[in-house]
Image (cartoon, rainbow, N blue to C red):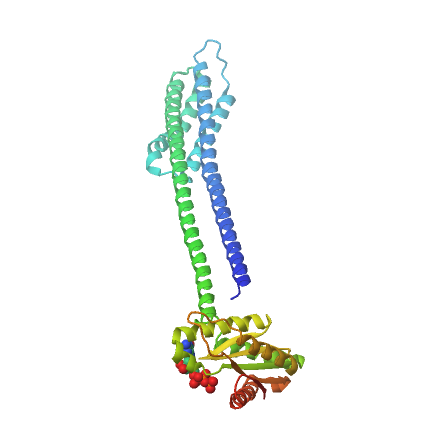
Length: 373
Ligand SMILES: Nc1nc2c(ncn2[C@@H]2O[C@H](COP(=O)(O)OP(=O)(O)OP(=O)(O)O)[C@@H](O)[C@H]2O)c(=O)[nH]1
């Protein structure tokens, strides 16, 4: 993978990660808003019912107490209306409670008190009717105040409990949200870590692949790289019917240099030759070490005269290679075999055997020369 592809992959992973973070943030935000809305709505409606019922119950109390006043003007319809609304409130609060998320064990007692009050409403209605006829209100007042007492106590208990439950639920929800947030953060960290590891792994893999195509002594490409590139260049040459040239280069009497000066000097000579090859060739040429003291230059879009010129340039340059410490006194030369082909002739195997034959001929003809195959 090329560096640019690494950058693209990095951006893609960063984009995916950002999208993931955005989605998580959105999901948490929606969850919090939704949960708050539902929990809040549930308790707000219930509290409103209880407060309205409480207020009505104190109205009932005032109405009952007004009965004792000397100016009391019996109004059966008004009482009837008040008791109807009391019944409505009782039903509303009971329904709200039993359909809420609240734990029944905490509101069982006030609910039972409300039920008792509800059951005694017909009796109170009867006593009110009686009071209207007899204008004697003691019985009605006694039952009415007892009922109102029950209602006031039950409603205030419920009010307190609902507020407490709402507060507990809010705390619970906040903790839950925090836990979810931490969990999501951890997941994001793991995903981010995995993405980074993937990126690093990919880079290392590319580096390894690159290294497997490089000759360690000279830093030039090796035979494997050459064969891959040759295949590509051959296809281009076939498509464009452009010439492809191959020059094989072999150091002359290299064994003698090794034997006279030692392998480290031989190695330095190989490195110096590699550097010279790099400098004497174009960017598009493929320079490779085929093994031992044999090198090659594969030149795309290069006819025979151009390739010959390059080969001769290399040959001349090798003779000037500086080799100090210990100074190599005998001449350092190379023999070169050149082959050029276009279209189907440019297949690497064909070029190679022709160039190899030419190299053999150059050696046979006395070395330090270039032959065309
Ligand atoms: N220093 C060094 N020597 C190497 C390396 N690879 C191969 N050689 C040596 O290169 C020498 C090649 O010798 P030959 O194949 O006889 O070729 P030559 O001596 O150059 O003879 P001609 O090619 O006929 O001119 C051998 O002694 C190998 O050991 C290397 O990486 N470093």
